[in-house]
Amino acid sequence: MRVKQHTIKKQVTVSGVGLHTGVISNMTFLPAPPNHGYKFQRIDIEGLPTIDADVDNVVDVSRGTTLEQSGARVFTVEHVLAALVGLEIDNILIQLDGPEPPIMDGSSIQFIEILESAGFEEQNALRRFFEVPESITYRDASREVEMAALPLDDYRVTVMVDYNSPVLGSQHASITDISQFRTEIASCRTFCFLHELEMLYNQNLIKGGDLNNAIVVVDRVVEEKELEHLAKMFNKQKVEVRKEGILNNVELRYKNEPARHKLLDVVGDLALVGRPIKAQILAARPGHAANVAFAKKLKRAMEKAGPSHIPHYDPKLPPVMDIAQISNILPHRYPFQLLDKIIYLDETVVAGVKNVTINEPFFMGHFPANPVMPGVLQVEAMAQTGGILVLSTVDDPENYWTYFLGIENCKFRKMVVPGDTLVFKCELLAPIRRGIAKMKGEAYVGNTLVCEAVMTASIVRKES
Image 1 (cartoon, one colour):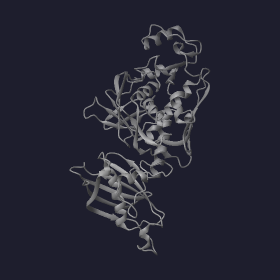
Image 2 (cartoon, rainbow, N blue to C red; image 1 turned 90 degrees about the vertical axis):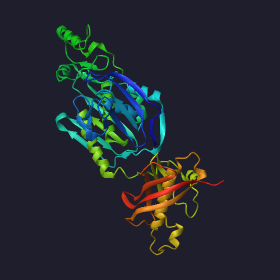
Image 3 (cartoon, rainbow, N blue to C red; image 1 turned 180 degrees about the horizontal axis):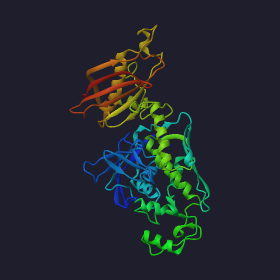
Image 4 (cartoon, helix red, strand yellow; image 1 turned 180 degrees about the vertical axis):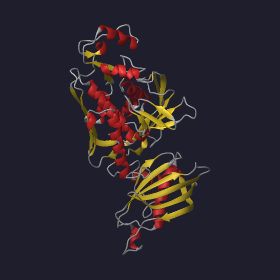
């Protein structure tokens, strides 16, 4: 799995009809900054409302997953989200001039192809995985649905479906690595049973349904009169079916294409958790209602693990900047080089790491019998972190100095002692003007805020 966050290099657009609304829309994928996540934007509605791809925004799961926020809805999002997860894209804005993404051929493959044509861009931020800490399960006895997430340092998905159908029977599908999604899952199309068609049609759904974008499974003998009615429903001159099989005798792309599409839906719906997942996902007879209910359980577990605004530090992952790269930008040296790593960097936010050990030179004279890191050095380390952010705005940072101009509202909330790992976060409070930067700095040990301050600094070009 990719370590750093990714977006696309340029905007790309696809067009087509929505499966359930029947409305033709244009859908444009646009690059987005780190930690943006997946967002939809209805550009056909006044105010251009944005809808976060968040499981708490799900308002309907009848034959698809529908999101609503700020009075705007977007229908049937799961195939688009599955494509993004399958390509390990983290940040993207999806603009729509209609209520529903195009259904295309009923799978995710055409979304994947258009995104690949845009190219991918690595960003200066580590991916913040949700690593499932213990088994999380969901069960709906009435529908014989069972889902589970088991701890794993990877993302694997296994799906079983059993429709008691002579055509489909019991089917399984699985991927052992998310990189397999593109070749093994993405082209698998949505499907339904013949007996469901009339119900869906009467419920004002599948207005954009067509035999080119959905597989219709026929598990009983169909009279000629019913075939004529189906032809009229799909605006076809004629439809055919074998005694048992697929309407219009469409060939399956895989023998277990329905199970593979259910896996696609699971991947798309679980994207609504909000972060890339590391877990073994097992799903028996899943559907959108179960997927969304399970995603809510996963999100609650994720929230319990820690607040999302605190920078996440995983020592197993490579940093955005290591000590050598930091040394090339900051002029500080021993004993005042207080920053070990940069783990996040964008236009307005930076996060850095300082490992505090008993061998710090200041412990020799600062409470040697009771080693506590001096508060002024916590602020200095936080300022060095902010210095990386400020200097990243110029093309030749090695030719600039950064100087403190002021510190406001500084508070020390908890002692920092040997063995602690300090994680700093600095965020610009306003754009840098005339070389003056003002930022809010915070320092954490784990999920505990230990120090905070508002800092003002000046960047000055070195004299020749």
